[in-house]
Image (tube, rainbow, N blue to C red; front, side, top):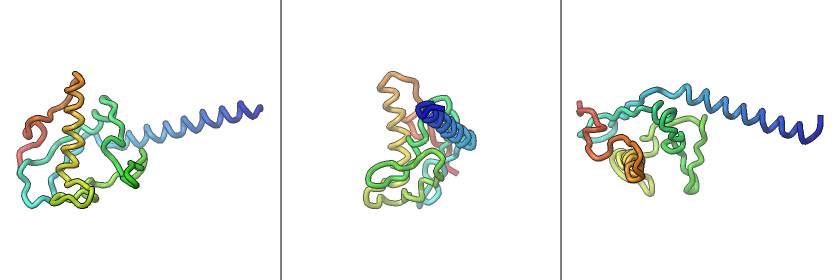
Length: 138
């Protein structure tokens, strides 16, 4: 077998391996995630249901759009890495250094994305009224 053919075969097989791992990891992701407001002194808005599978599979939102580990100003989180709760880094009560408060992190990510879609004339989810996303507080 020629060296070029062997190299090409190795690249193709490696690509299939990474694609397979990505598909398996995405298959493990829940269909829906409920974002709770735990850790706040007072829960004024209630939880938010996120259609996780729909965002990933139907809307083609890349995992790293939401999941992140920031090192030297860059997101180094890769698909297949452990997903930790947002509150592990984002304090619900206060901003710490450059790390946003938890609700600001959620709002910046979700609302900004939906707003950008609307501005681009594309279909989008709600982002203008609290109760369009938040369920009643318990």
